[in-house]
Image (cartoon, rainbow over all chains, first blue to last red; front, top):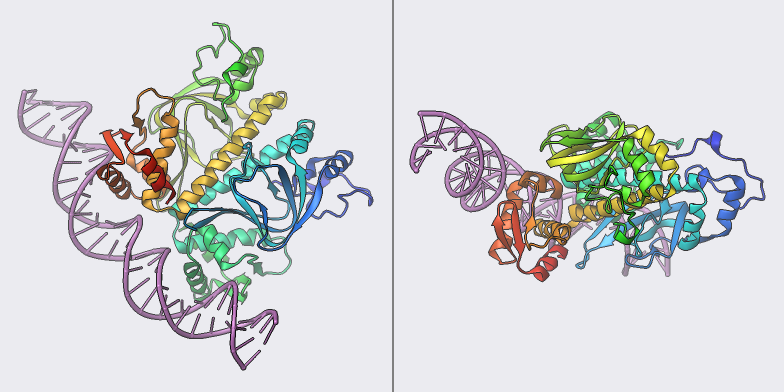
Length: 239
Length: 239
DNA sequence: CGACGGATTGAAGCACCTCAACGGGAGTGG
DNA sequence: CCACTCCCGTTGAGGTGCTTCAATCCGTCG
């Protein structure tokens, strides 16, 4: 697990700019001491985006990096004829801006209303250079993202529609595991799910209906469902 | 480009253990000074693998990291029923072992006869902690791999068979660009190509035949070909 | 209420897969 | 030197899983 153990998290004064942050233990900031964190936070600002708004655009100069504190982003790429692939979703605590290139390779858009801490890239790099723990934390985040992306390669290259949807629901279930309520929330539209799984929305819809019909899941709303037979769902996800 | 500019490469004594290394400028080692490099090299050994041999196995404990100096590796994952996805190929200069997990997530096997420098993970991590330039170089490598993996997500999720094969040939062409001869070498079998592109070998074969028939490429051997109409190939790759 | 956007359902098409046969170069052995 | 085999790649014919196109449903909002 990437999250810093809470025992390691320095306690902050109520006056600290990050005092209220709910994702500090998850975010890269979690490795910083109170003083360093204050300095870090002061070099950035908080920004908000509404659903559908673009945070960074593919081929934009990568002038800033971001830490997502609330909401949900999607990372996507568009082919010339309009086909779209979503490379991943960013959840609170995730970092946006892992690149050594001049330009962003993917577009980042808000799926839900989102709050981010934005840092000028130059200032960020400079700060990182003086904070070895932050640097190695960034490496860990990059390694983690790389493993996730490669796992997704297996899904897109070799899994059937049923396996893809089952894998996706399990991934979301993992994300929701900390919740008290048993519902899995689908914060994104069917179009986003389809573009993430390399399917069409009709296929996603049919697969979800199929899982419902075979009593593996139960729909509790258009954006929420419950896993009835977790074991079966895991079997389906692996083929 | 990730390669260290040759102007930055320290000149080595003929007695230096890395004097003969052909990929130092490409590998992570490229950022080390002669003395540090000597110390680094001494903490590892050189190992050889023949085609088909396994370097690391999926779910093996990640006890070592490697730098590939010659040959070709494939990173792959097997589903329970035998379906296989290749997540990527490692070329000389590439680094094997970007992970913060205890276990490897993918199997690494030799495609061609391969030579690697192997370092015990603990010793490696320790060394890296004392070499900030190496640490940031590793981050750059991870970021680069991440971008490549996400690019491959687009290919697997949204591209047609023709587009996949065309993209693949262009990738190889880029790898061979430094060569004097105009031939693109396909160092891996059709099976490997198919498992990398999320296709069947029959489909790969048909697509290559199609490109040959439409005079976009010319076959100069089973493992080599020439690009006749580069522009057309690029159009085909993008849809 | 009607209109709208997102989701579902249905029917037909097609890109790629599956299964099967064939080809051709490399190695082997007589 | 040719015959044989093996392995890998190619080609062909038929099947299928997902897509495409189209209609319908349903919750939301004016």
